[in-house]
Image (cartoon, rainbow, N blue to C red; front, side, top):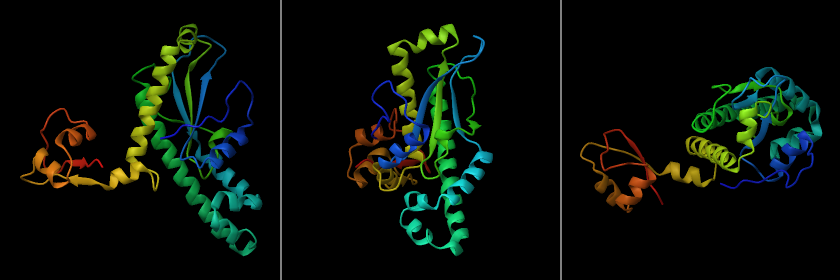
Length: 242
């Protein structure tokens, strides 16, 4: 996994530009990290936002009107349909599929990130929240927005100023994203390669037999599957390390 910042200093980057930067880096996920604020000091806790269905529908329509962006968003397909008004329905279908995939993937990522954030900080919302935020609208890049806490809450403001707490938040987001990519690996990624090497435990198998069959060590097999001992059960799926 490689993280790329959309900026390296304290300056404003236009919301649409942030998505453009992610696209230029061929990102598999765009995560926007913020601190929340409110008019009173009571609200506190982290939350993760994804694109709302209502906004997604209107955004698809807007994308269709911007025919010059078809090639950028759809790759080779865009070059075919860009100059053909008769293929508008094909364009809409492809964009709908792309947007749907991005939204499903983003919701899965948000769920994993929330689960990990809940281990290190209070949660303002325990389920992903939907909103029509500009940074979430890309149909080709799954995008989530993480609110790490309320700077309008004195206790959380003090926490967010702490480098140690910042590190815990970053680590929890990393763990959540790693869980997401292991469950839904991008094509041609190392996660996808690892996922293809899976073995379902059969009757008579032991950890040492499985390790020998796949030419790996028992320690490597145990560590790769986060096993505390050598006990495995029939039907269990083991990931085989390279």
